[in-house]
Length: 424
Image 1: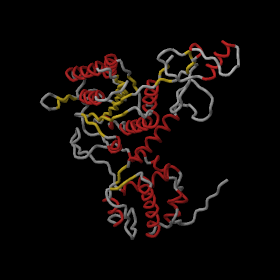
Image 2: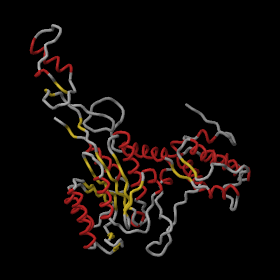
Image 3: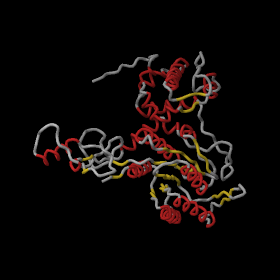
Image 4: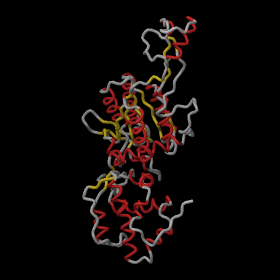
């Protein structure tokens, strides 16, 4: 059994913290989905930009350490001591050290140098030099940080399926990174010559009854292995950033971003021939790079589903893939439409017939282009359910009525099921 002895202060205490576990605990904070700044809300409330200062990061780190058990109450008491200036300085040094490690390991970057004031002031003191400096420096996730959060989310989601990733027993379940083989079959013209040597030799020996070398092989002796057929797939992930995604006391957009990062990591590591692009739809629609997904936020917007589908269709038609699909995550009805003159028509009261008709017209255009639309709906309003069902019938896609807790499992399992089929 391992024992730990904590002194009042250890200058290397920051090095003892599991950095990857800490980053996993900080996922919700790093992917926070508050209002984008500079907009007016429905009731005149100005949107607040997410606080991405190093000062707020330190507060989040401290909460994560306490909640995860890495910083026990005894350690915290030892660091704080009697609550004097010296103890506060030691706590500041610990948090500064952890921020420095996150930056040095390439998970975070700052818009200024990662310099820490030489003389540490209490981090909780109002008007202190250290606090002012930390507030002025903004942090951002790096590509490595985004990829790590995608990996951790994918591990959490796949682990919740209840299938062990260890062991060598065959199961009927699909698992990422494992290619399942079928029985061999006689070779036919046009088959890939993936020769099953033992079965081929057994056929030859059974036919001739001779062990003489060289072995007499005939065309009908040839056996080839069957394997999973994998086709290339282009995916556009459409994420709803309208106002309702954080209404009613529930943040629905942060789980959607986590699913996007997990799906991106899955495709990059297990299906390198595939592509995934991300489209945000709100009053209009826009494509964003995966690297900037962590900073994406909802705003006081309506839901222009038709414009999102139009942009996604344009992106997919530019790619030469065997399969093209749209994965749409939303929680509301279409309530906006782009007019030919560039204006945005908005109506949030009920299901507007004009908006619905134009949205379904774009769904039909996707169907004509052989693009499947799978919708993951985070709401269950009766009229909305009927609309989603109608949209699925037109596109020959699927509709999943889920919640933030099961969203990831639904998305990943649906994607994995479509990626493989048996070739006999």
